[in-house]
Image 1 (spheres, rainbow, N blue to C red):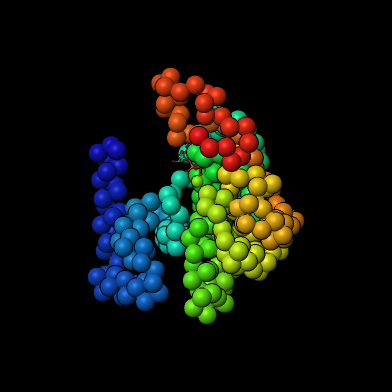
Image 2 (cartoon, protein in one colour):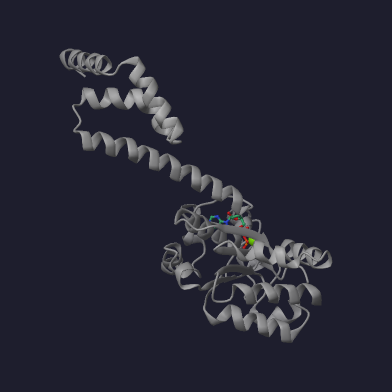
Length: 284
Ligand code: ADP
Ligand code: MG
């Protein structure tokens, strides 16, 4: 900034300060606090000075104040809903390396990231062996849903079934089912890592029935659909669950190497086929 421009700006700033009396500033601050416009409260003096120094038209000034307030409130809201979603980690989609996992159709995932599947009530089912990024993708899509304004809840299948079983035994099942039905998007991770008993399978079926055609779910599993009979310990219940889940669903089938072992593979400690089960459910 040249010396003369600097002088002009400080003269304008002084003029702005002169136009706004301390009493006026205090009253404005009070109004903003009462309206819970906290960001504007913090930035009021700076915004007024900037507007005066740059001779901003009234509408532009108002747009700037309200724009900053909306951005601050949106960021706070997203942070709050991200905390409420109880993700195991927070990794946005940009951190997912699609080149490493060519069996995933990047376009399809980007399409899902637009969150139309939530509007349509479609489920997303991510299948694949351990370490290929199922949880990562589920979390990334959950974050997109939060950005789009939806409420999201993440749980593992084991935790969900434990909570439902306990609530059932204590006569509080209805309350718990409501808790898992309320969020617009429910993510159930790791179906198939632990066997589910008959009561658990029944309770899971009840939840899936409640959400059916109302609230979409993202599910991940290391077991192919054919093996879900064993996962749920009952072929009839597994079929009934799959029937509802797959009625409106997108399935992502990941066949590839575990990302956890990427570094080891790179270092030549493992050969690729040591870690390349052809079917979901293959263990390393
Ligand atoms: P899964 O749920 O399939 O067992 P995760 O999603 O937990 O696998 O992935 C294991 C780890 O590797 C996580 O830290 C995850 O962020 C990371 N990861 C997996 N796949 C990718 C990928 N394609 N790009 C970046 N990170 C990845
Ligand atoms: Mg996982």
